[in-house]
Image (cartoon, rainbow, N blue to C red; front, side, top):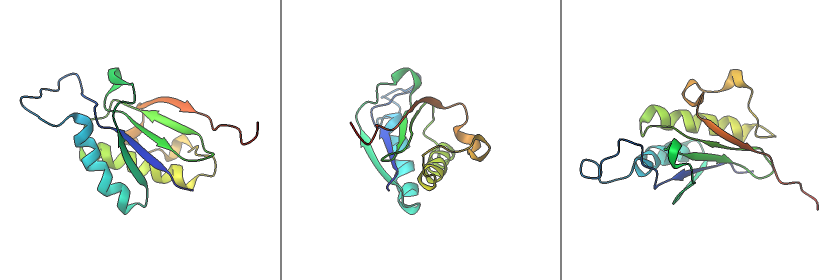
Amino acid sequence: MATWITICDTCKREDWNPALQPKTDGELLAELIEPRAQLAKIKSRRVSCIMGCVRACNVTIQGPNKTNYVLGMFEPTSEDAQAIVDYAKLHKDSDSGQVPYRQWPQGIKGHFTSRITPIPGTD
């Protein structure tokens, strides 16, 4: 089953200045995540607004029939992008989507916003 990293491309951190940086922080983060995700065989996509503006930059780590996660307060840096992809790889390798805390990359600790349990398979 595929694991997806969904990146909010409209995220702007509090200090974002369009005169100095025409691209949003979310666009810059997406540009850093996408090639790393592709190398890791993780799917990625951009969406406009995950509705976590107070905690920008936001991403979700999702997979069918798995626990899914919303994470935020990232910076558009290579280190944050790599930590997100490293966590997505662990999510992909987990049957449930849950990853033991001791395995979390340091760069994602403190960035979790919410955990979304899978939808039941039957009505």
